[in-house]
Amino acid sequence: MQTSDFAKLWTKLTRDYKLHMDNNLAPSLTESQLTVLEVLLDHDKMKPSDFIPFLSTTPAAVTMLLDRMEKNGLIARERDMNDRRIVWVSISEKGRQETLRGIQIRDEFMSAALNRISAHNQQLLIYLLGKITS
Picture (cartoon, rainbow, N blue to C red):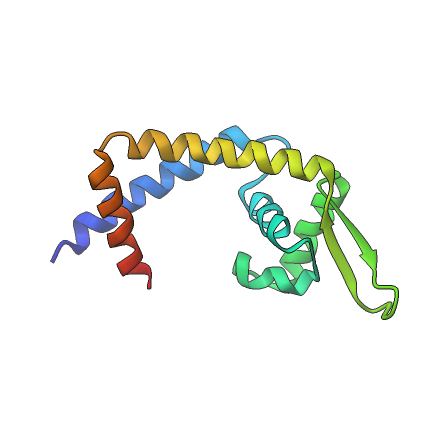
């Protein structure tokens, strides 16, 4: 079994990815904020509790993250007209621009990593990772 070798390589890849994202998203965006913005692009508007499965964190942490994002103009929050207990989160125009920038930064990293192997091996890698994650 190749467990140890896989763990070492996976750790190095994820560490390099995190470093790349942290350095290139800063100072206006974090990786967690990018996740929220990408989810909002797909869902238009959401309740804060809807983000928990995407972020794997606590409700309190989601609230703090959304507070920072609202302060930085990345999102807007508004009360539901029919039920004032519900708060809806939506992406702002600045948030849309930052999402595109973040996706480009991520794609540059992934392209650089994947371009080290052939197109066939890229497809094989994606297939195998799909098998591991399902």
